[in-house]
Length: 122
Image 1 (cartoon, rainbow, N blue to C red):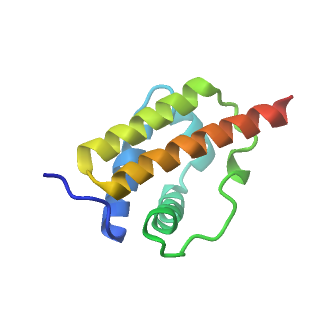
Image 2: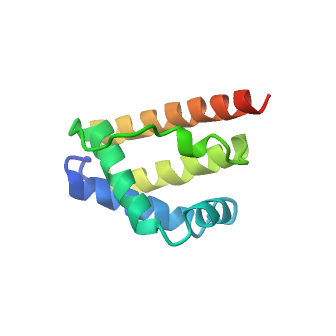
Image 3: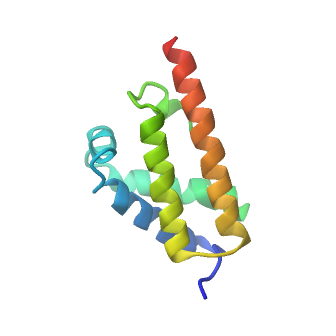
């Protein structure tokens, strides 16, 4: 039986596995690699603190998660792929209340980010 997401090591596994998939994905890799370039360690550290704050209620992330995404040239297709990779990462590694919460929060974030990006374009 898979364990739930319960500590920072679990968060790191989730984030590292997910972004390994993103960096290989035909639709997403260029978007992420072109923006992040050689700053992947910094980005991953930021994602650890973000998900630790969101899922484990340990407030280590300070910032505005939407701002870096505001001008991305992305569509619903990109967010759908992002969610698909994120959900697959969770389902392959974890099971439980926090795992379900991570999927729910990712779903809501993707909806909100897409809505805001489309609004800013119009």
